[in-house]
Amino acid sequence: MALRTPLYDWHVRHGGRMIAFGGWDMPVQYTSIIEEHQAVRTAAGLFDISHMGRLTFAGVDALALLQQVYSNNAATMKDGQVRYGLICNERGGIRDDVLVYRWSHGWTMVVNASNRVKIVNWLTQHKAGRAVEITDQTMTTCMIAVQGPQALALCQGLIEADAGQLAYYHAMRTRYRGHTCVVSRTGYTGEDGIELIAPAEQAVELWTELVSRGAKPCGLGARDTLRLEAAMPLYGHELSEEIDPFQAGLGWAVKLDKGDFIGRDALVRRREDATLPRRVGLELAGRRAAREGSTVWRDGRIIGRVTSGTVTPTLHKAIAMAYLEPAFTAIGTLCTVDVRGKTAEARVVPLPFYQRPRKETACR
Amino acid sequence: MDPKTLRYTKTHEWAYLEGDLCTVGLTKFAVDQLTDIIYIDLPDVDDPVTAGESFGEIESVKAVSDLYSPVSGDISAVNEKLQTDPTLIASDPYGKGWLIKVKVEKGTTLDHLMTLDQYEKQIASEEH
Image 1: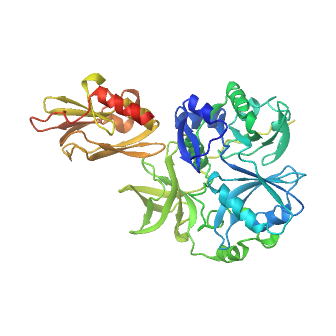
Image 2 (image 1 turned 30 degrees about the horizontal axis):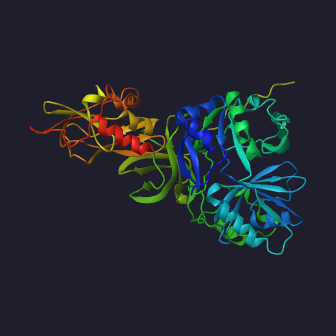
């Protein structure tokens, strides 16, 4: 039986087409993926991301446990800071990619829906003997993302705090209609915006208020094309237990000098291993999308595989992310992709495919 | 084209037979399910097609689906306008969004296909 977020009924009543995702019934789209995608690029879109796992850590040994399982350095984080990192297995493969929030009183970790149970078990296994209390708040809270160039303006006065004052990748605890909530300047779309964590009972009220303020409800379909344009990896596609962070281009989120952590020894070796495939961006000729599993060819042999691909609503081009042999990862390298039996010319291009226009900083 | 005069496959193609020429398209239900059509791959004129077998594919942002021919015969025309504007399939599925015309053998009928009434019953059961 698939899990449902507190907004499930709202989605169904408002034309959300529901699909199974990571153990949850989630809306893939309401109107059209392209319309929803464009709303986020040009105005503001609204996402129910309550399926993401939300774990809190309390106790004197919380930091020690985090440091053991997390590739980034939690010890250098300030209160209110959010940091991306990986949880690795002993072989350096990625168990999950997560966001860690530091609070004065403890920590929050946001994990992928499909990995929540696996990560909770992993944490429980490694906390043995430590004074850490882990609470899974996924079912008692909701999580809603508001993303797009108008997202912050649209949220003015919604919550007690002014989210516009938050620096990128920072969070604070505030109130929504008297109830404690968390707001962070984070997202998975390549646009500016915020993510809110609130009590599950507040989900429908918060969501409908955001809709009435003009945010367009968006499903997982647009979330996928948006993150793909922004070249953000998706667990199960670009990331897996067999792929290490260096291959994935996430070496910046691995701090080998922070002290020991699970997977560190393997990562020290894998970082120097010049034979491992690496994640690249591909732009394909034509308008057919390469999909997960499409093979990439050069000189009559397979040099890699596509992990995600689409025709981008913003750029109107067929783009893909793929893992290729390291000899073929230089920008401009030509190759071909087998798109369901037909050959498409392709070229290695820089990631991300899309970068939002940065606002000119006005003087004074 | 009037949906009432068409016949339907389980895979959501419609067929209209006039003389020995069968026009084939996708139903509005299928188009609404696909949404965001970005590409369509159709056969060439004179290619043979077989009833119940794939003659092409249609791609939306989300996924790729096969297209199945309601009849057997040879392709006599393909809708070239769809190559530059695949959105015609969504905006006018029973008119400007037709896919192929198949020349069928004399005596071919569409009796093996569903009527509109039968097709509507099928999609009602798919929706629930």
